[in-house]
Length: 248
Image (cartoon, rainbow, N blue to C red):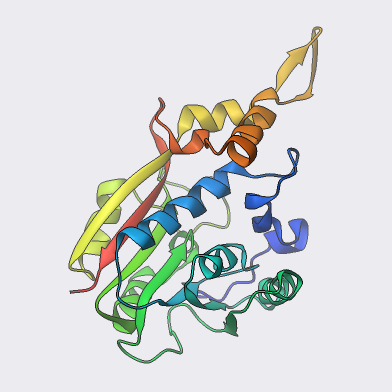
């Protein structure tokens, strides 16, 4: 199905995207926090005259919340009733306001040329009809409007994540987006060596355990110091890319 699959991770992990800005050293997720920070920065750099924004694949509403707090008039769209339920509950808890609706990301229930911005954070890799998805984003944007689209960088021909249908190399991603938008700029982030270090388990007193010292170091740096290691430079290539696209 194109843009209609129930996201199975919600059943296992709950509203886990909100861990991106948790102050808990154990639960904070600097990888997600870095991705969301880039989205917000790219939106502001676009200098759009209006603030009407559609968050496609909003899921549990974590990124929608951050964009709402940044002054955007957000509508969140998702096909997952589980994710939308989490989003509505979390917004109610925080006393925040946004609109949420269920819909297919490849058949957006939005009028032509009605939006200033569209955000699709790590959605495209889950879709079977990616070209229809991009055509829909271009359709609903106002002339000069901007879309921020993020996705993992392709590493192998068969995605490691079983939830992913198709991933992209950076130039392949740029070429695909260029068929629908007048300008495309891609920013790569999340160095592979930082990701490996964050997840690596270390021996302690000769015993293999579940000790991940860099996880807690990175969590503190991101949540308390404000210096997210995943937004810095590193070796081994990059694992994420964010595209800012302008409608012709």
